[in-house]
Length: 69
Image 1 (cartoon, one colour):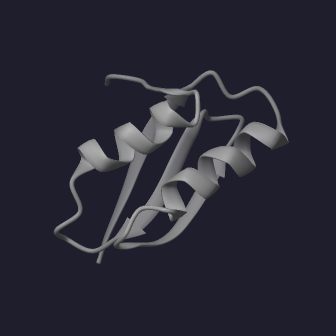
Image 2: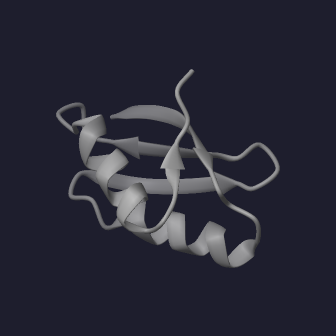
């Protein structure tokens, strides 16, 4: 398992938090997801083989954007 944290833009409320958590948890291989609204980031645990592009796609389909570092 690997833990990954990525920045998300566009979250403004607890509803956004639930939406992003649900989107990330829907990805096969993700075992947990935590969203920190104040830091605008999601931290998730996933199998090593998970492609970050799958996370980006799920977050974007939920209406949010991944922030580049």
